[in-house]
Image 1 (cartoon, rainbow, N blue to C red):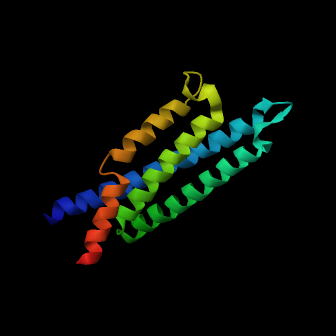
Image 2 (cartoon, rainbow, N blue to C red):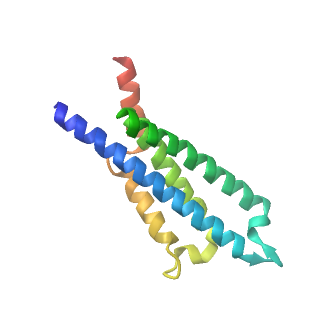
Length: 141
């Protein structure tokens, strides 16, 4: 029914914006950690692999943020927002755990909690593939 579709749309938009906020916070916390973490006498933020992951995280989060903000403003395109936010949040969580190293999955650091939240949000209200399929079906009509 139309009421159910509106509720689903609003829920997807809200979840997308929540996931973008989580991904942004996780990205910021990770950057702070790698700036202070020292290895071989220098900050791991200076390593090329860390810079590449940080750049990927920034691009993913900003693209998802744009889609989520647009979906909220236009009350439309919830599927593209949910798909991009799901992937950005999960990939940011994966990179954050890797960049934190062993401490990323200990109780001394909240990274594992963000990772678990990203994983559960990824499948809640439909996966990225599900939402891409919804977009493809709407274009066929």
